[in-house]
Length: 517
Image (cartoon, rainbow, N blue to C red; front, top):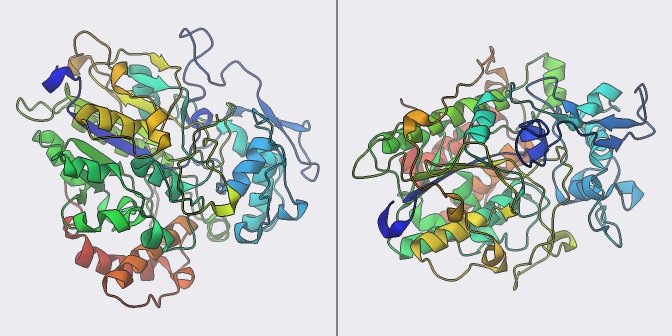
């Protein structure tokens, strides 16, 4: 036991990008292998095939094992209107089909009287629309079937091995049925200030003023730190919460190599948050982007799943092998692995209703924040957890806030959302900790030969990269009390890295020492 009888003194959260539970862990257990598990193995889930896609064996697309390590490719739709179609199978008004997100009209594909629970039947239809937008043509049956592909344990040996070796949550939900920034904001603030879209770049930096759990930790004298891959150059967490966290940019943001050293020497903070690399070369497990460009160049996909597995294995080993007698170690550290949102990939479990944070300054796209995002893969790794544990209780991202508040008496809830989220700590239920040598050993599949052509050449950024660069440039301009004259939409990746390197050196000195170890 640690101080006060708790079974953890250090909490580490590693959050990947854009994968649903079924997409990543749906085949984790076969039927009857554990007492209960809400996956896809042995079950016959499917989605209808739109009538304008031909060549398939039937008018439905079943769930099936993923055929490649970079599926679905191209990237699915993940913003609220796309998720509405995925959940309810509706496109309202009909003109929203094949429309860019900024051209979509109210009610943004939400039915007038949403079914409860939603049918979960629109993933294929929405993917067909997004595929045509990206590729300029309708997909074949096999191409659109990628959205129903789910990875097997053999394809993801690290994440699957840890899910089987510790506790897997099969009812952990993201907070908002939309994309990255709102969900990452909810993770630490239980609010996104009413936003459901990432863009336009700069709006989170300028107006997301929701109080964060980081500030509660700071006020209570607890330690915290955010670690990122230095190849990303700037941390998304900092920019999403810039209104609140700017005073800590120089002191509380470090590289992933600092995390490995802190774990080795027993110096992990009370709370550590890890961002994977959201830039090329991705380690965030995000579905591939820039599909049309890669098709034209005959370039390979970015191997984001395998690179993510390599990152996870190294983070896990850093915790497993930590043995300090006076600081952080394998017995007193809780490692939570999760994903920000489902990213448009298939899941069969309808998301539940949730309490809306009150006093929101806006309701973007008319969303009331009264329903959750979809299930995402989440694994709790601790010496105090038995192997092959499946947690059936409903959890969500704000359970991280609730757990931190309870562990260190950090005051009342930030919003109604974390007030009702369950605490993770009671799941650490063993009478004695498992020794590190009893923990599973895991290793990722080898990486292929991936050139860095897409990183180095002068071509446009992906959407998420543009948004991250835009937030960084907006913050730099705000600090210097000037306008932001750079057209983010026109930047090449090479030009963007020049800007980010400058910003990193001025604003995030803890990241400037670059790659090591």
